Length: 284
Image (cartoon, rainbow, N blue to C red; front, side, top):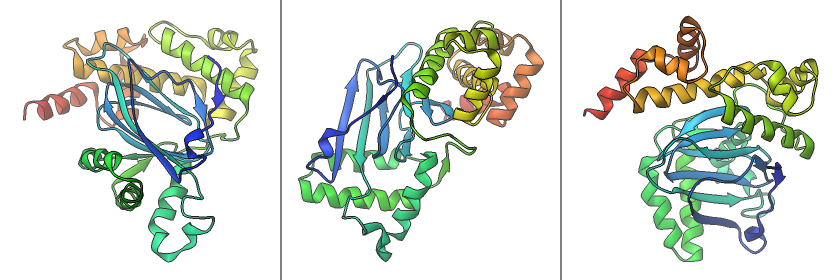
């Protein structure tokens, strides 16, 4: 699949565009557009890519992405329902060219500036009904509700997705190569992957590939690969009764101590503590 620039045609005559997405699965490739995007996941689960961030997503996941930040959502595993989301697009001229300079929009302005690195909101479920109600409203009230939602988000608990640098100047050839690497990792992450394997996918030498990937993604390839594997392993820990060693082997880790170190690094807990935390929550 070719990474692509996406034109949001619905903004030609509208200040913003809000709609419900529903398909068998999320099928958009790695892409970017100059508009802001707010996405609330209604159903399905998988992996969310935003800039150099790789994380699991599930129902009630809510993220805000700034202009030209490449992204895509990919379903993984057996799905209990179709892929569903509320998606909103808008640009900087939402209320005219200088609206963000007005004092009453200071908090929203700060929110939108932070979105250049992607923002994940920690407790999004309370906004679900507000977003659904907005979709059913008449144009003027819908616009007022949207501003109110942005204001809510400006004070909501959240974290940045791309903490480290990310090369965000869109280039079609670069994004096509990165998309091919995403697809390769998604397909082969359970197997042993060498730098030679990965670089061969996009017809580069190992040295050139290492420099290319680090420049574009702001992290080495194997850091990205381990993040992907840890996210897949965390999902398996929650959804299965496999012991920790089986989870490690099933997700491409050849060393159990290394798996434990990587899991603690990315999740802040040991695999056993992580599983116990979710079992406790689900038993309530």
